[in-house]
Amino acid sequence: MTTTSRASKTRSDGAPASDCVVVDLDEAVALVERQAHRQPADRTARSLFQTASLGTVLTAIREGGAVHNDQPDEAATIQGLRGECLISLRGQGAVVQPGTFVGVPAGVPWRLVARSGAVVLLTLSRA
Image (cartoon, rainbow, N blue to C red; front, side, top):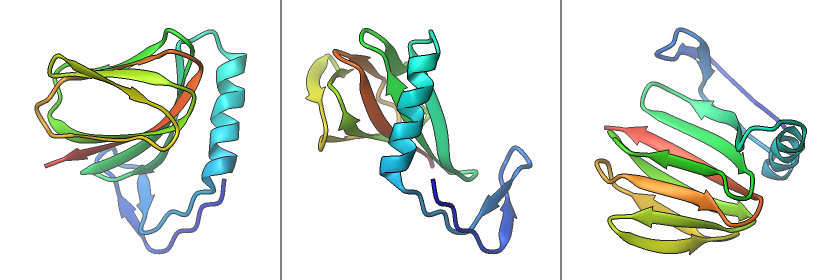
């Protein structure tokens, strides 16, 4: 993964955050998939970018595993990169696969369940 940074800022947790981050997504996906194969957990995640109001996380989910937000106080986007998931929101469902983009406004609970091993890019934004 390639990271380029300039002047340092501080995140809400006190850790430094950079102005700019450049990530080779193919390399990051390969890394998170390798980590997922080594661990028994339903999902493996790697933070790619974090500020006080925005966070981007690359998440590998094993078949049958889930990622959800039942009490969302932030807006979310979910981008399918590998595999296939079902997303449920507001009583409706859709398939998330490579190339799928889902935008979820703040206040809407959502649940993502992997139908196969999958990788998604999840971005959360606080108002």
